[in-house]
Length: 234
Image (cartoon, rainbow, N blue to C red; front, side, top):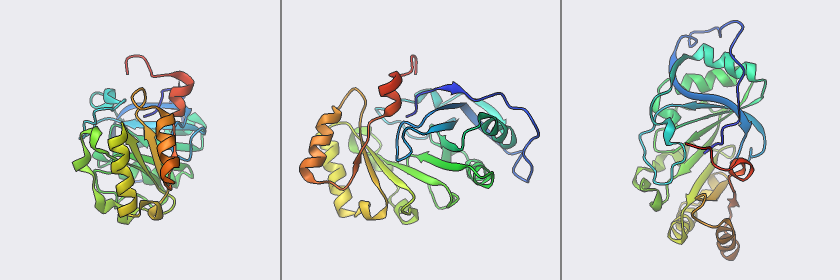
């Protein structure tokens, strides 16, 4: 999903106040890099990558976040994010919503005046996510192996400030995406992003299909991988 950049600065200063400060989440990493995907691509962003995911997508590039991590209080997470000195914050995973305390984390980040986005598979209920958060929902195409996990009820909770992402591994995935976009009128719900699986599908092929069909989507390429390649060992 996101190429690791510079680590966020070490936490220091006063802990966050409020009833949520002592809540704990398992965190794989907190770091600063350029956002590589979505309409925020290219923006310096502090990433909070939570640990754990109930899905096992074939092409997943963050399997290292499935387990391990460290327990952190919400207050300590907020301190590290503040020390990073970046206005854009992305909560990602794994699947961040697999941890119940993700919801108060998102709320607290918004309360701090930050511009917050959430990267989620869409397999879990989005109804409790703070409406100030920009939600990037990754619908699963058949080649992911997790297509049956798509929670279509989540579409009712999306607004124009959210985005739907579909990662395409080949022409069969593209045709599935094309049908779903048309039948469910996804482009009327929010912007739709199509991405090729890195190293498997040519971005040019995907772009040609979209232009041929005049599909109402944005083709995106993972910017972080163009800049730095895949992170060794991850």
